[in-house]
Length: 510
Image 1 (cartoon, rainbow, N blue to C red):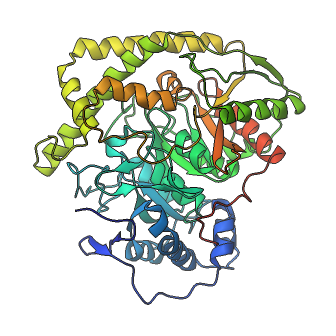
Image 2 (image 1 turned 30 degrees about the vertical axis):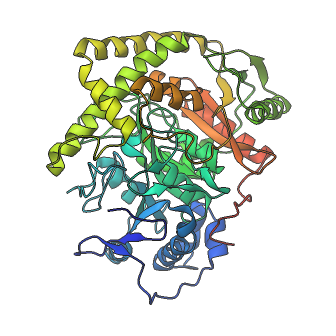
């Protein structure tokens, strides 16, 4: 079934999913949409804790925001009003985000009895029977699930434009990409629907929508966030779960809530010396920071993306840091060939699992054209091909790790271009080979994916807006396990050039 931009799936407790608008008669709420959408997650939790607003009123504000802006965005797929209110009635944990509305991306993470289509006709209708560990931790933080957001098919796309549900629009400019694969979450947070939303990142899928929508997008260190019980090191270790937000302190506080291995997890980075929230606003000291506006491929990037980096370098120099133009060097074409194997095999695994679960057969009638091309090619790769690609990733990690022995951090553009118009990166493009698709994907985000391979923490910050009003992110990268340095630097930049007051034309408050 195709769902147009103005239709939502509403899921009431004890009912089947249905497509349609929200209830006509809603309980009144005491917080205005302008006030609600101007606060970050911790700010919303604070007004609940002071009893100025109830959790129920925040939920109604979030649902009203969805009803107001989602017809223009097509970012939210499903609303869960009855489940949200039932969760509040049953008593919320006393976490730092108690009572704050939350959205989850329909990929990897599962919420019990909440439909998860994964952006695919093949997986359409899948309803998991249990929460994943991360969903349990989100709930423990006090976040209240109010709905789900769009993702491209199986997450292999830097934009979110599905055959199944249509494109997600950028709230800064309709008809342009909100990024991918967490584009639905990115657009929702930027437009004021929620202050923070779930996202995940296998090649940039937290940082890309953060850049496209003017948000904070932190990709933590590999294994920092639990992915159990369904998987361990998804996408051969390239992918990690977390969120997008509007403030550094929200990302830091949420990381405190959800970080740490779950039972039986295969690995765990060194735990932090103190809570990450304490790092937001802490003095980073005087750091030695590399920067570059040149991708490993050597290709030219858009001048606005280069300007964003140059302006950020100036801010960091003004703060007393030492900035040196330098970058990790490696063979880009070899890297693409190896990471392509991993993504193609992942497409096979995703499609076959969906087919087995839903009793369907993968094919061009239920997979987008490029997904089908990746599936067919992935079937031809051997176990030796996959192990060889993972071995290449290990060697690359050592090389990049050696680079970071000389630097505390690296500054790059997040993307090679500002948010692209819809249709330029088309997962349903007929006649495109799997390798052509991989090259197209990573030419748009040539700075992000290598740090999925190395597992290092990286963050995209909204440091620049183009002359035409589109947000452009700047990426900061730190050594493996050193989210603390990223959060200190990010908070320093946030203070130097605040961004939270910027609002896109499509916003809950307007």
